[in-house]
Image (cartoon, rainbow, N blue to C red; front, side, top):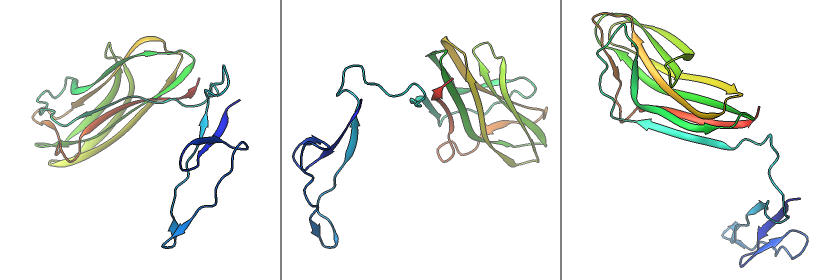
Length: 184
């Protein structure tokens, strides 16, 4: 069983074993801040429940993507490929966010979350007028995967004379986030 502890100003004390000093007020605010946390190492074998999310596996940001000049062929977004060792008993969420723009001619942009073999796991489409932006937030949830797993982001445009570029890479970077969101 986990033990709840607090900081009494000089040491961590398990609740119920010490005294929680009265908090002094100074200028209308607490003079000391008390922090309470759970110590899962207190008892041998104590651990978080299996259903508890474990959080970020990886977070990638790319701020230097070059313009993509291929139009009807998919291309990787540079810097947005990640490989990790997955656990089949866990649920994972992959999220990609970014902004693309269509510089010349109208066209449809397609964004993909893919595996290492470029198999589409999730897809989104946006129709763009000339000189317009597409804001992307695409997610893919999965479980039952194990071993070495790769996720990457790819993009294409239907406009044969268009160009895809990352809109203001320092202000609006592309991101790829892989999270462990709990038990499968």
